[in-house]
Image 1: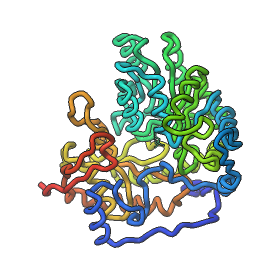
Image 2: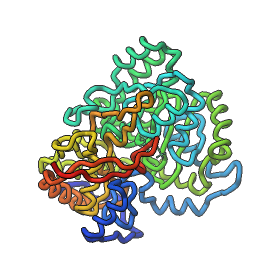
Image 3: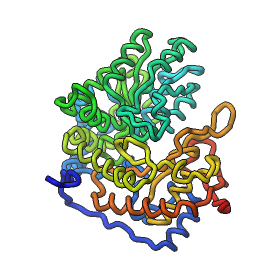
Image 4: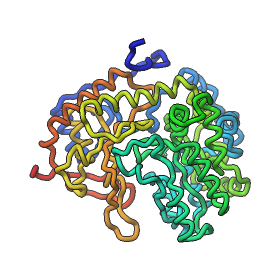
Length: 461
Ligand SMILES: *Cc1c(COP(=O)(O)O)cnc(C)c1O
């Protein structure tokens, strides 16, 4: 009664000290990192909200699982534990472990996409689209328009626009569309969920044309929580029931275990079709390893299987999503422009409105992330024009509507007190926003440039 938030549904058994730095140290560090927070050392960061990928805190039960790692080259008991978890919780028949999510994307893109094919998706994800394009595919965004508007309040901003999908089918023909990539939740839209109703409708439409649905399942548990919270008819369903129903509308999934499986490394490709599975086993041995370990050690498969069961616990996922929302609400109350509604894994600052004086080709979100770091030691990341990269055909920048800085909350790692520190840092920086200049890019790698690009500040106009 009267609490502002639900307390952590866990006790702390082991702690990791965090590092305090001075402003001078941070100024030197960001200079050395080329104004790219990806290139900072973790020891240079106070609260590290770069990503929720692989930054999860494992439970005592998962750590115990590491000790029963069966490191056989083939047929490890831990593979069967993982297979059982995927079948019981997600309902897919076959599983191919991979070193992380993009390993699964590589295999799926190679077995399913032919040159000139179109792959519709509810907004792109960086590595997902890169694998599609490297295999000759053309990504087509079919998310609802609201997803591109940071201020549009829609309970399921990750939904697919059925008219856009139908228009693509009419334009290029169903035989040019190997599958729809359906992400739950949508990372680059701000961790926005997809409604069950929408998944059902996409299934009905694709069934008419024999088009498959491949989930990007990375944040499926967060998506399930939003369905329970917001969608009519699901309040009394359990998280496992909702997850099972979601995946009943798909033919397979790529999974980054580093997110909703509560581990530090790992992933898998899940499939229902036996022929596709057979092809996947032919490819996985080239890029990852034997089909029964893929890119993973036995112990890591055990930790992932155990994490999957823990992740569907209602109190775990409720705390997870509500902690993220708590940070978002603090910023919103102070007038800081953020993407609304707050999504499942992160709070996204709207850099267009935070720094309206910086044009998009001077990388406002990149600079905002760099300045937040210097100001407070809080590490975040750019999700805007740098992340969007260049058009494969014209070589021009993609100019995404969303120019965001992502404050990503690792699972089970930080407390509400840390969220207060982050909120105070962002709010005090917002009060000094006029003093922040733009950037120019001085080094640009050819693909996935946001990881390693380097920048220099421009003079303040
Ligand atoms: C992280 C992520 C991936 C890629 O997974 P990795 O484990 O980082 O290779 C794919 N899709 C989404 C939505 C992600 O967030």
